[in-house]
Image (spheres, rainbow, N blue to C red):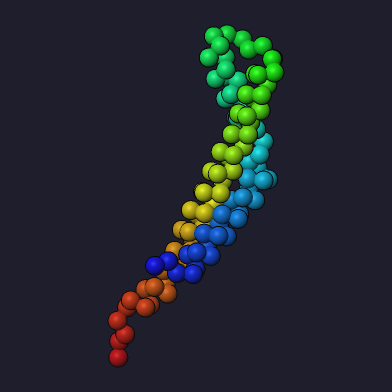
Length: 103
């Protein structure tokens, strides 16, 4: 069973990951989502892409996917790092409990 220190570390890490996304992740998510969608459309259409309504709508959806992926990665990595830090912080207490008491 997880102890409270590990759970708290996970929540703090996920929160910090979300804040890092807000500060540093929105622009790369926007850029890679739009660029990736444009390259995919060029490959599917076999050449240059005309700026029609459908193409613009697909690029906007790609931007949304790119931003969502960047947010998911930031939050998950933050949560994993927080969980690891929670285990590191709670390790000495766990070792003290499991060590036999000397008389």
